[in-house]
Length: 96
Image 1 (cartoon, helix red, strand yellow):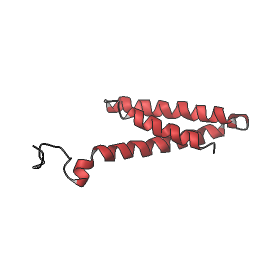
Image 2 (cartoon, helix red, strand yellow; image 1 turned 180 degrees about the vertical axis):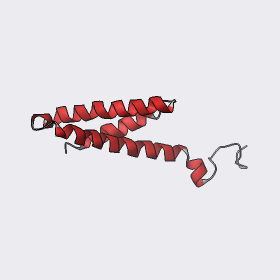
Image 3 (cartoon, helix red, strand yellow; image 1 turned 120 degrees about the vertical axis):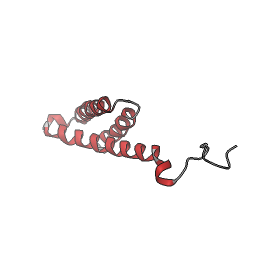
Image 4 (cartoon, one colour; image 1 turned 90 degrees about the vertical axis):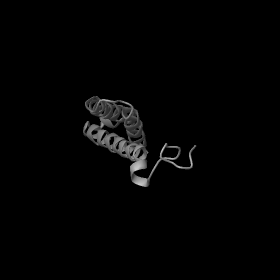
């Protein structure tokens, strides 16, 4: 159950960074978000009292959740090239 927070935080980080326009800034924000939320996950669960090695595991879980969010949002944004034209686009002959 402790691994749900880092995964959900990764989805939030991935969704939030997609609003950032320059690719280099998006990458930097993603890395910082993974580190910060990985640390928060380790700290909030108390795993750091046993070993700080859990920090790398939690950061990896945040990264994985964020990666899934970025891939999902990117696929959703490019659905017009994958599945055909967008509804309501000017190329739609039924749209007046």
